[in-house]
Length: 113
Image (tube, rainbow, N blue to C red):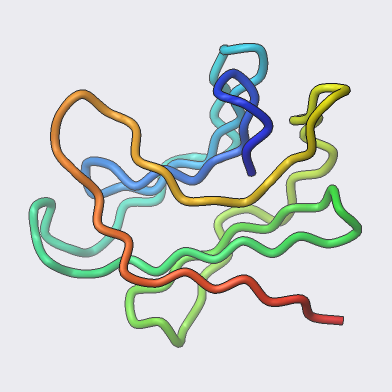
């Protein structure tokens, strides 16, 4: 969830690990222990990510290696306080780094009641 470049809640895939963190006022804080993925570090194995938002401020993060069986990374993150007075938090995919690249093949947003 993106407030701005100094305030975001993210799940990061790097070095064969998933990391959930909160960046608040530019300072990054881990929210869970890294999840080590059972895949080759430089392989072509896709990692599927899922974010569920409830009541506008309760976030749950999941991952899957096959797109069917999902594992929750952390129970829930509540009230991450990402937004400034003149903005709204928004979901998205992004790549951040000096080298390398990320390939996003598919994104879906669905409102579930």
